[in-house]
Length: 122
Image: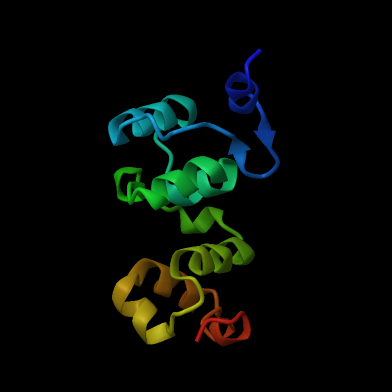
């Protein structure tokens, strides 16, 4: 087995399978991810295959994934984690309301808006 074959079959804990995407077009990458994970949204992909998610994010391809996020199925911790992942710690309730009304409404309904500053978002 070559080193490349070993690396392609190596599982990276909590990140998914290591794959060399550099030789693939954007369409091939999206096709491979859809073949493996189906019509998954970006947040779900980040939880089950962080390596694939990071590759899509780096190539600015995450908008081509399914956009539905099922807020009702998420715990409060998942909601906060998603906001942190998407906005990187630089968001206020006012900006969140303007840029992502669905996330804002979810956080408002759950009483989580006051936690933005507590988790480093300001």
